[in-house]
Amino acid sequence: MKTVFIVDDSDISLSLAEKALESQYRTITLPSATKMFAILEKMEPDLILLDISMPEMDGPTALQLLKNNKQTANIPVIFLTGQTDADTEVHGFELGAVDFIAKPFTPIILLHRVKIQLDMDEIIRERTAQLEQRTTQLEHLYENIVSILADVVESRDNSTGGHIERTTIQTKILIEALLEHNVYTDELSDWNADLVASSARLHDLGKIAIPDSILNKPGELTPEEYEIMKRHVAAGEDILNKVISKTKEELFWHKAKLFASYHHERWNGTGYPRGLKGMEIPLHGRILALIDVYDALVSERPYKKAFTHEKAVEIIMSESGKHFDPKISEVFYKVHKRFRDAKEGEVGYASLETKT
Image (cartoon, rainbow, N blue to C red):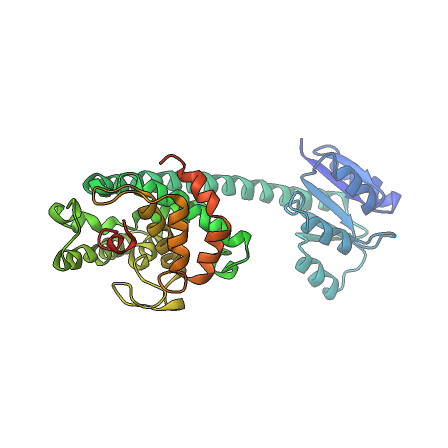
């Protein structure tokens, strides 16, 4: 049985409302908003009937407090009032009330209005649960698709084993660190760190278009081979553009494209393929540029030994303001031990650019 709180300083109103509803709902009568909040600490009703004019705390003030609390914000509230002017109703709806019932009320009308709101609330909750379930299913589907695509890329590039999974973890660490240190918070405010980090797994998708002889060459690439290697950026962007054109779930793939398209751009404009400089480079690219290099530095490749974490940090900081966004570099330095801990146990910098 659903529970309805009836909050009114009038004993007559409390009695009438209780009699009108008690046959279908569990009713709890409360003589003040203060009493209501005391009870709310122990139980949550399905609906609140709230008088507007009460001593100590009036209805609008109580409603604001309800809406400002995550635990009570979604409880539907119907105002009981003798004030039937338009301004009062407009203000009440702006605060979040779902309906108004004028005093003196007819019991049968009160019952029907409460029933309508509770039925609507139940439908909304059911639909919301269905949408959340569908969203979860889609996220799992994306994870599976992305895992397959990432595995295809990594299975072809024998020199970078585990790079995709490591950069996914490191990307999430850096996004959370930027938020923690209030850097680029406006841009990051609507980012889901898990979802965005997952989309970063496709940053090297275009490598499936690079010949094996170049992709898996054990030594440094010639200038001509390096130009071919650089084409993986455009190839990845083309693939993701085709995916975006054929799916309605565009946001995830758009973020993946931003990572794929811009992670080789440099803060000073010497990167590729567009030679963008500074803030011209989307934040996704500026984040992954640092992550990509860090992982390459601390990882052993057929053509180089792995640097220590400390040496990798030193190299990255020396490139702050040149290769990397200085604000991102600064945050990386503040939390670099998190990267070391994530990589625990797992080049020269010049030769690095010929292979990443």
